[in-house]
Length: 222
Length: 205
Image (cartoon, rainbow over all chains, first blue to last red; front, side, top):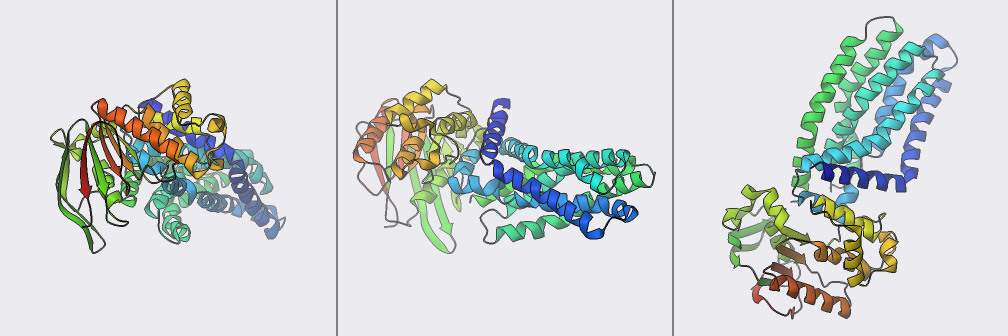
């Protein structure tokens, strides 16, 4: 069972690395959006600190949308998705491996560059840490929820726009808890409550996400 | 033994076939014939379990395939009209990874031998996307040489193949039938496969 999981993980990582430009484009998009806000708002430090959590998190949400449409559609078009459905192992397991691979190349880089981008907004070191923790808890949720959207819109015309409409409202709780955590750290309040709620959301989506995605993929292949 | 009882398939408001029964025992070859759009692919997909039939059921050794789940999937090898290979991986990598996903891992020398038999030697290391249509089909079919499955479901396997590759495929399917395998092949041509018991099913008449 483990070997199938790692086979899919290794396959997807190899494919992503052979199309490195996709990963770099998304990362550049994330960096440029946050920088544009910092430049547009001007050099007043208090204002910058105030908007920093929201700007960085909204940029992360939009960046995560960029690569979603390819998550299952390329497998669907070349027929490998059919073979996934015919694999003896549970489809949820294969889906989980795919989403982990996707997070490693889309979520993880965002977490790594976020502190550098946070410096543009003069976030103090403590808040940068909270930002990184909130992203570490939040980006897997974005990946999982986004994958549900990608699976549901698989094979539909205009699926691209539809994913955004379907998924962005579902991102709201993540955005609210994550930015509240960073805000709280800026104003010297406790952050545990917000981060715990985020962690609870993560556990919830990690458990139910793969089941929902597997069901949606089965329907799409009817 | 593969059985289908009272299968009906409705796509949209068009009934492709109904009250379809079939029974295949080891060594049998079923040739699914019919013109384009008559439901050959749908029938094969129903037999794999990818497509639920509108009514009726598919049995493997007397048990419905839904109840068998992964056990049934282990016994079948399906090659659809898509090749199911990734464009950015080489032929060798593609076959290695697909064998691991179907939970029957093979070594790279076995994959190399299978590709060689299909005449893919120099191209085995190239990205799949640069191969010609016929070469791509050969790579997809080389999977059969690595397969330990009893039931082969092949959807138009001869499409894009030249005559030497078609002959090779006939030999391979013949050998599979001789080893008590079962094959279901959809094709609009005559199959001419040596050995096995040939059954025909004409759809859309």
